[in-house]
Image 1 (tube, rainbow, N blue to C red):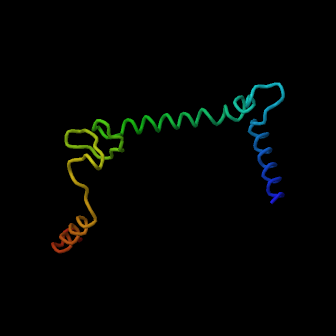
Image 2 (cartoon, rainbow, N blue to C red):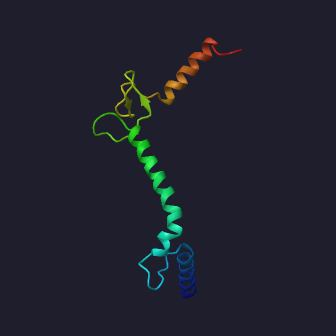
Image 3 (cartoon, rainbow, N blue to C red):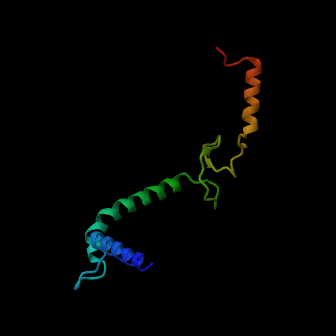
Length: 110
């Protein structure tokens, strides 16, 4: 168990040294991280989070107070989630019934 603790400490130190998180004497805390590794990783990460937030905001349900993702649009062109869309969702039974009906009439056969 002690060997595992020593190994974990060495891995943490290696990660801190190579990402710049190890505080150098005479520098502010994590200065090396934000001027090195962090300046490479953080901007793209923040950009992805911002694009994701804008995408979610644009595609959320148009009902006031509803935060669900709205995949479908109504006939009026408004986005609505599965809870607020006026047309019900198709179930597996609906699809099977449509398949049986098409199979019995011979539609779709070549």
